Image (cartoon, rainbow, N blue to C red; front, side, top):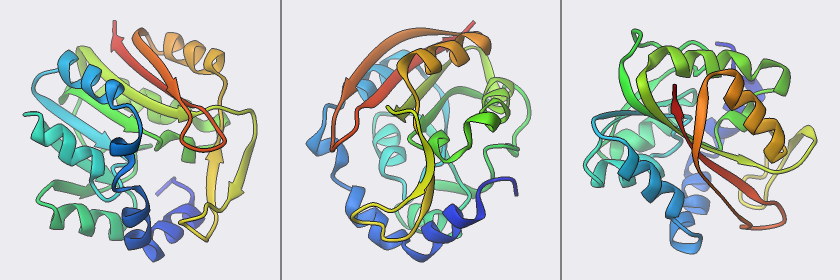
Length: 199
């Protein structure tokens, strides 16, 4: 597995705490990016870095055929308990054949990849998406890369922060055309939310 082992260990140890901390996220912040993704895609969707299934449930309730994938056994267990199809796996090496999905949802999951290695999961996303498929992407604004703790998750996880310009450039590099963009600020940092179509 290519993902950061410390981050996976933290999620395995604090899966329930993370679930509790984040379960009401979309009740407190605008859900327009989720709604924009749902209206832009029909069919089968892969939720990568799906965590405890918070977003997967929303997408499933909206009528999409959702497959969740996470590198943490604890997260996979929690999402399965919520009735989601959930697979243990690494988004750097997706266990699916080419052109398997109509959409990929990657909300605050790719920020656990060092910037120098972001190309690999993006290539995998392109590979498993059908032509014209949709990507829902959420990242956090900033310029640093580091291990950090958060209030609800008191052990370190790897975070890579991005500027809007950086994200737009790598989306263009992998043939994604941005169709929707928005920001909001849950805490001290802006969340950068994109919906993009694979050309």
